[in-house]
Image 1 (cartoon, rainbow, N blue to C red):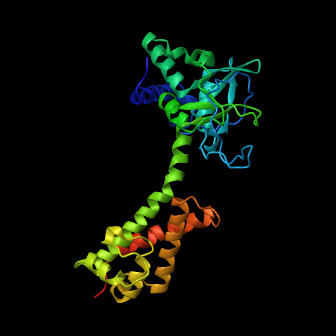
Image 2: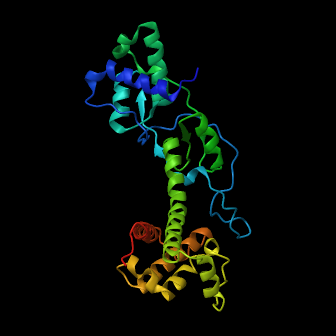
Image 3: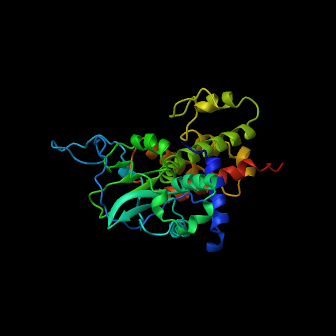
Length: 316
């Protein structure tokens, strides 16, 4: 029987009451950062997909398919099957884990997680046996070791698996032990992947808002007239403009924008051009001059810089 997130949270609250004397503060863990365990099981191997960046037999790059290996994972921390359940819960809370491996004689035989513990607590509570928790071992809350994937499996597989389970185990032949990858790790990976796109969109929307404030009357016509004799494509209107249009139009009409900025027009032009260059690198997968740290810092700066401009009322 599956339990809702509310039931799981309620059962964690029950666990706090039962073993509250063992902890200063207990919070529901959201991330599993694991450390040690021996690989002792045969993995469930899913169909192998193309890996990123490898060269095939004829010297050409293989298909750039994102794989499980692209998502950061961590070594699986484990406890012995005879360890006290409360001790396992302490380890989980102290290290912010959501689950642990369970070993017997050095062999991984199962998993214990907030989900499996919540189920046991619910059953014990129903049976009126929750007061006996301090004497229980982790075996009472053990669950199967699954699913297990290989690093070369297609990234899309994670979406299907993590929709059913909060974690997957990764059997990497280059590692001495099983690795663990949680739904939080996938979410964090996706956030890092899409955040630059969202920031660039916000920057462009802020620039467009500035143009609309500076030219409240028929901006589309102003843009069409301005670019008729320019080397760049003439836009049909504001929404047809690109990062190649904004700096030229703003600098040529700087008196309309000067009250929004402390810096001069050349600074704003160069900043917009830099954002446009990063946008092109990301959207067209160009990496020849891509410096992630520098680009991230510049996008952060530009994002806050232009957001601050549109919140200002220009002085008259």
